[in-house]
Length: 246
Image (tube, rainbow, N blue to C red; front, side):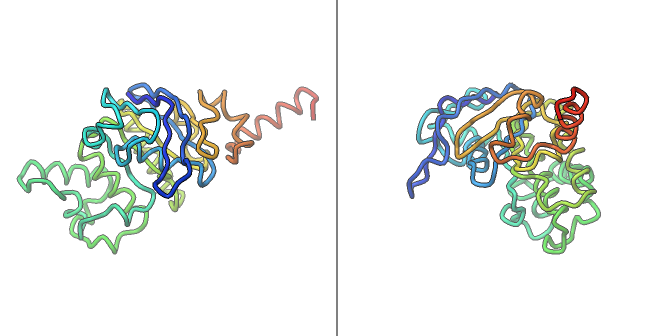
């Protein structure tokens, strides 16, 4: 579904943000992209969404090759940014979910179905500035899924959420996974989603340093500025006690 071939990117101001990334993400995969702040996670997701073109190497999304096919990539990918306020364009939940759509009965019914799925139907006519942070995040996700994308890209989806919000976001990501949607989730914190992902990709200073199934990657994430999940760290300590190595 998504292939990176020696992908590099630099902003016009200079200096590579990403350097020589190569990776394949099969269709239906839920991939976690992790790294410390400034490692290039958000830039990578923006490239996958067709918002930027690589300055080196190439990116393939469902047979669409970038540089050159950014517009067609944008047609099949949806990026949900970390800051919901930058993405919400409508004045109410209704306006945002129907933004750019023909306001016929079918479109309204689809938007209301999505709002109901995300527990936003009761806020259908509410001004967006009255929504909680978690509700705004859900509104952005609902709007993205309403477009029926082939690829969903989530940038720090758990940031700023309380415990119930994290549980709800996990459930929504899990539902998408069960439905076979290809998803890439970026985060600097593994705790909230490590048990959901099929694989991890670790970025460090714009380079892809480790990839693979979580169990083969977690022992090395700490050296790249990422804290391993508490349960994994505890298991390692208990294991060392059991073998007499502590």
